Length: 161
Image: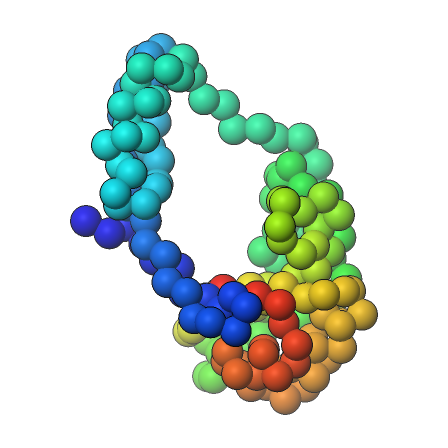
């Protein structure tokens, strides 16, 4: 059973990844839930049950921003450069923000536009630089249009919805 899927555009091609939910008791008897590719569920469960004592979620106690999508504890060093809230019939409420992740995961850009609208869900777009992200934010926000083509036209490196 597929638990979730992620659609995106990477290097100009549409990608779809699916994930399934699993749950297992570790070697230390800690019950953990996990997501992985559907074909890996049994292997991951077996590995956790045999080789992992327990799992802790790392937190730094760092609170980076007080509102928007990342107004919570995180292990990343994040600066929020722009933020705007939405309201009204078209959006159903939400926000858009430009984030700089100073220690991004390997292979990912640290310049992100995160756009959430309760009527449409969330999207992330990665950008080559902070300047490009800020320019795209301004153009996108002022035009009040949203979609894969628009993000690509504005120069995003990767788009995830």
